[in-house]
Image (tube, rainbow, N blue to C red):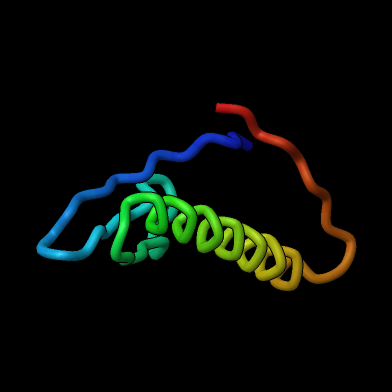
Length: 70
């Protein structure tokens, strides 16, 4: 899996808002660009961990994991 993701960010009024292009639902809002990028990183890591745990739970017993490169 890629360790690089795309942050789509913009300033809207006094706020910086952003989304991670590759992972739906990862979006944040902060008062500075620097804070936004840091919060997006934290939120992305949390989302990936949650998705990983959810997939393993859904698979139940006797599952296999395979790396897929694109």
